[in-house]
Length: 179
Image (cartoon, rainbow, N blue to C red; front, top):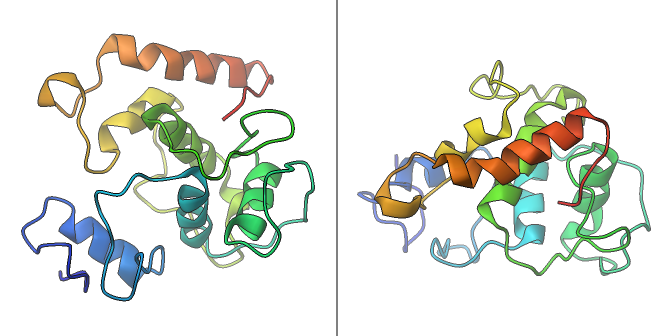
């Protein structure tokens, strides 16, 4: 399954995933011919991926985050994430769109999105691969794209899961921590 990007070799371990993301409109790369697969992923870039995955749903506007510039790519995506409970920001007033994402933040965003089927646009359903996953955020982490855990394995160590598991416990108690 070719991705159409010059910098994604057909033999790359993520080539099929990139082709799927492109075909489903989740990404269009950093240019028409480049994906930049080794570029760091910012919070605003990932917000855009999630919003595209969810079918470009509408959400009420929000001025809670003072660091979201008007008419930027994340102007629509971040209020959608906030309204859907997918993010709470990095503080009460900031989202930090230019900050790089940590693996735990990616896991938390995906976990919250999977638990929020109403976040999807009408006619867009939760991916069948996301349905029925356990409600343990740590379960997501082995499936994160093209990076590995310590020791080169794709399996998280118990120590690495503790912050994510703590996040889940806090969420279950209805207190929403920053992410």
